[in-house]
Amino acid sequence: MAITAYFVRHGQTYLNRYNRVQGWSDAPLTAKGKADAQRTGKVLANVNFDYVFSSDLARTMATSRLLLAADPNTDIKEPTPEPAFREEFFGSFEGLNGSAVTDFLSGEEDFHSFSDMLAGWGPDKLKDKLAAADPYGDAEDHVQFWNRVNKGMDRLRALPDGSTVIVISHGMTIRSIAEHFGYQTPSSVRNGSLTRLTLTADKTHVDFYDQLELPE
Image 1 (tube, rainbow, N blue to C red):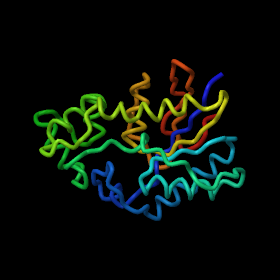
Image 2 (image 1 turned 90 degrees about the vertical axis):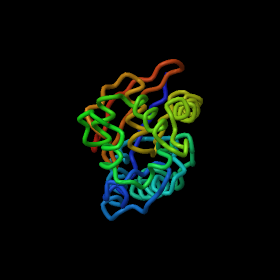
Image 3 (image 1 turned 90 degrees about the horizontal axis):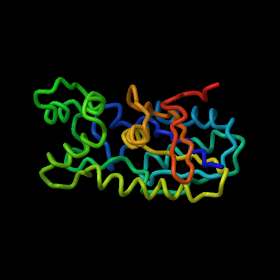
Image 4 (image 1 turned 60 degrees about the vertical axis):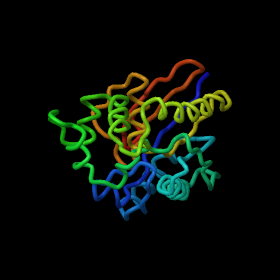
């Protein structure tokens, strides 16, 4: 038996819209972001899920509530907050323009976005570069990130066998999880998209990544 986990990226926020580094900082959902959440809720109406966990940040909690309200087939009204599934913490880079941070970090490398840096360096190396460059020393390196996220993954594995769970999380976190478990991600995670994992006691398989509809 196994646990089936659908990871959902939160709806678009104003900081997403303005290409700002978000991390643990927060911004309200845009009108598109609210629509992202409602659309995903309708898609997940076709999934019989037992639990809903959410990063405890405001944008994921808001997405979770809109998603649940749009699903006519669930009795769950509130997500269970889980800080382990927060976004990567970017320290003093939070709130800055994403392109400016890319230019600062990439040096002579020909990177034009966070997605380019992630594809070129991999998620863990990018985390370590951000942490090393943060003058305040607050940004998470890959060890700190995984110490946190693994607590959430352990919580999922501890659910009753055969459970299906929804996890509302964040773009860098979901992409990092997918890469960590052997899935070569072709692009960033879209707002409101679905990534499904199958978890057993000692293995994690990425079934699909960044889908706006459930695959056939």
